[in-house]
Image (cartoon, rainbow, N blue to C red):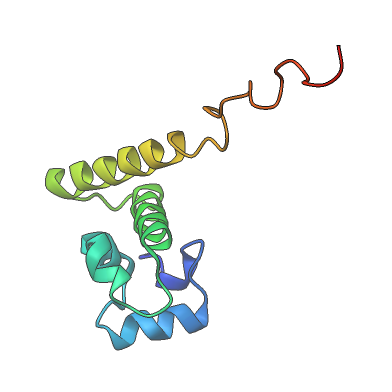
Length: 108
């Protein structure tokens, strides 16, 4: 049995309706969509689009439905891109920690 679009983690009934309004009404259709196509839909950021596309691909794989080699490569590229984005998000790691730690000026 084919999985339903609301079986995808991150897609509830409201999001499924919005996707259907944009002609994405199946898990397969979502997997074939690009991040740019999904981000054009209200309520879908680049991160959410990448996540739901990857979740859709995982759901198809778990259900035994295979994708073509091109679609599989597309999914791996998206996951790699997402990992690279997360790596660069270190907050304050490169800050100059020596600020304010010099000799105090004052009376000798």
